[in-house]
Amino acid sequence: MRMTSETVADGVREQLFTIGEIPGVLWTPAGGPGPRPLVLIGHGGGSHKKGWEVVSRAVPYVTSCGFAVAAIDAPGTGDRPEHPEVRRLVAIVQAREAAGEPVGPEWRALCETVASQLVPDWRTALDELRTLDCVGDGGPVGYYGLSAGAETGIRLVADEPRVTAAVLGLVGSEWLMSTARRITVPVEFVLQWDDEGSPRDCVMRLFDALGSTEKTLHANPGSHFRVPSFELDSSVRFFARHLGAAGGS
Amino acid sequence: MRMTSETVADGVREQLFTIGEIPGVLWTPAGGPGPRPLVLIGHGGGSHKKGWEVVSRAVPYVTSCGFAVAAIDAPGTGDRPEHPEVRRLVAIVQAREAAGEPVGPEWRALCETVASQLVPDWRTALDELRTLDCVGDGGPVGYYGLSAGAETGIRLVADEPRVTAAVLGLVGSEWLMSTARRITVPVEFVLQWDDEGSPRDCVMRLFDALGSTEKTLHANPGSHFRVPSFELDSSVRFFARHLGAAGGS
Image (tube, rainbow over all chains, first blue to last red; front, side, top):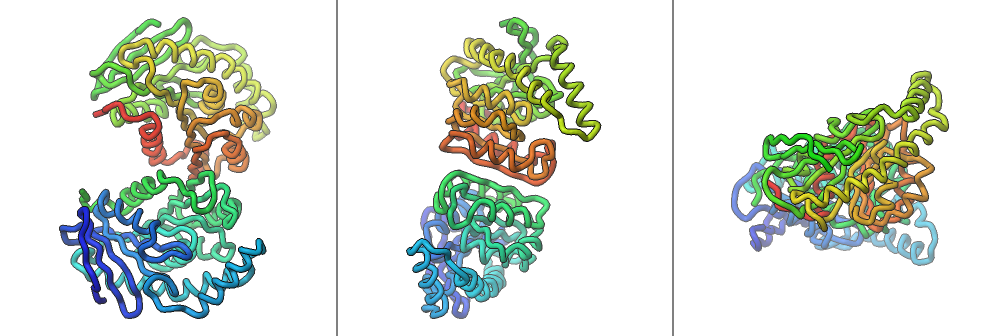
């Protein structure tokens, strides 16, 4: 693990890092060692580790809860090299969407191509992050990811016992059903009522499949990208409840 | 309006009152005049103005938000006199439930009998409560009521422009659809995933019918009476967001 930059602003330290070929970012409170809870944020499709939906969550998780927060680029995004197969599949899916056609089997292939690399990368990142003084080994771990971040996240949370709470949603993929059944940690699941890409019936079937005793569905009107800002606030409280506070500002 | 008792404990003043034949209770911060936001809490079936689900919400609304909170007895409950028609309908519905039969048309008749008296009583109570120094005229008003409290609440919120935010749910009555369409204020709507009395499909249809631009559905596993305690916390924040804080403790 190699730190490539460090900046501090408004009480938050941002460190860019690489672990082998994995580029990532870590946000922590500017002062104070770990152990502290760590939240992993999986970015959405077409975004990257420092996309707005990542940063807008990372900052309050650090400042309100004192958590460490990490994000890594998915294959073919951000500071990763071009990924020819991801690029090919994205082009097919985008062309179908532009033509108003169903996305076809390439959508599932894209999700599986990304997840097959990203899930092991998240586990590697988790190993390394917990060796840092500012994170520490042994604190609880949460995962936040909607849409493409949930495609990977459902697989990660199902297989990674160190993750003990997750905010997921905006996904209704039928091929995730059996994986969702293996999730047993508390989950807050987000649904957009008028999401054409992830129809509410499919999202609710996936919510229903989750094996968790505590799971809560938050549904709001609007399309895929219109999750209301109060859900950010809700995710802060969800993680504070399940990961515990680390003494934030 | 006549105050019949007053007690203060843990910073909360509880005043029992009657307005004509309406028995009610008002909780306010022990010190400090209005105006302050007022939350009306409609109790569930078989309960009364001081039932556990009312008091457990009233206390944090007062202590966390500085709100005034009021509840009144539904016809035939608490300190109200026997209501022969309500009693007759309840007996029929309960006998059908005990026999595992559908509740029949008497359920709707019961809901309408209660609401036809309780909605005007709430409006009368609202008039009177806002004349009190400890509530004040002009502050925003919220309504909280699940199950039977939502049967009345949906009708009240649709017709009473002074109510500007509501927590409703555990109800899916088909006869409330057109009334729900007339509601335009922000609503937090609670659904229990395994609620046999209010099946999720019916509850979601009613949520879908709400005319509100901001409406949020919170669904959790479990039966009718098993709403998780974090939903109480969520309702505190919902009302704080929409009614504003009054400077609580």
